[in-house]
Amino acid sequence: MYFYGSGQRRGHVLLIAGDAVVRRRTVQLAPSANLAALAMVPASVLLGGELPTDTVCLDGARDPNTVLTRLRSAAATPGPLLVYLSGRLTADRRGRLYLALAGTTRSAVRYTALPWEWLGGELRGRPAGVTTVLVDLVADGDAWPVLRECEGLPVAAGTEVYGVVCPPGFAAGDGAVSGYTRHWIEQLRRGPARPADVQLHALAAGAAGLPPGALVLPTARELSMRPAPPTPDPYQPSRQRWPGNGDGPAPAPNAAAVPTPAGGPLLGGVSGGDPRPHIHALATAGRHREAAALARAWEEHVQHAYGSSSVEAVEWAEIRADLARMAGDFPLATGLWIGACRVRLAGQGVAAPEVHAAAAGALYCWTQLKDRASVVESGPELVAVLRSLPALDPRFLRLTQARLDASRAPSLPGAVRT
Image 1 (cartoon, rainbow, N blue to C red):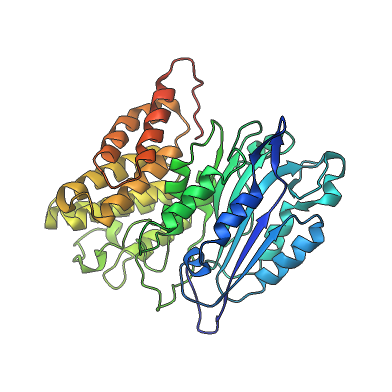
Image 2 (cartoon, one colour):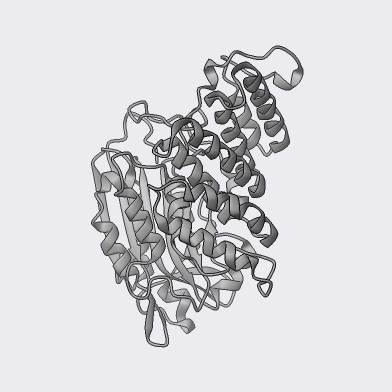
């Protein structure tokens, strides 16, 4: 999360607990427990900065207008904003999505639940790059078909959305803090340096033990449509792969130090000796093939100049991996991240943060694979990489191996969503 502008003096954290998910008298998702756990994390850690921050916890609300008032107040803050929502996602007879509140009934969804479109409506006017929505939800039987049809959970342009939505009938937390939220918090507490949101999300989703079919956000389509945010606040140290952009989970490469290759039109469009802004602009404009071709040309140039195992070369491999992710080509992205992680591991050792960042990139992209054959093809390499990192949370390796074993089973369907 990034801070912009000199006039922004305060941040805001809004935590919203909707209706609990209960099945056969057993609480499967307890939003109140999730809020209580998040409320124990300092706001500066949640937001990733030291600005003064207002924190509001909204638990047990029954009136949608009460929640709307809080949303409107949060959206009005000029600084960075985090909105967290946990609970049951439902839908009315017209197929419109709602966050069920305490006391929401199926016959009165339109009057007792928060319309999901209200969230996007309130956040729509905020500048890009300063708003993050984090969700940990379970869809009921009315919402799940709608969610599958729209292939995502839209909020507002310029808003980063991370989270998971479990299908109906599956426990997300067994009455305690749910797996995704718990692992998000654990990653925040692991070290002095706060990981980027996309890395936190990748690690949390990979360790949460999500049920088959769970929707992981952002989807490939949403990633490809995400615009480039403005330039980060100069007081926040930048460790992003793209200058002025937070898409990449690993530290920024030193591409500007690489001499510009001589030659053809493919390498044109570069200003200031750094091709990354131009390449990223192509990708965010949907010109993924051009961006990939230009990145590949620079990678070949760097390999020739510095060697195929050089830091400069592996940084361009990671850029290509991020471009593949933005294009929704998760099989290619997974393979590139795994290869980058191996090169960094050989050159930097198991403790280097860049090694762990590359492993997180590989794990995230692998969790986005929907085709069982792709999961099985790259799974063993990913397992080998994770096994070589003793400091990594062992649950990542265990859950990756479990998904790989399940995907190898001949009785399972060909499509894997988790």
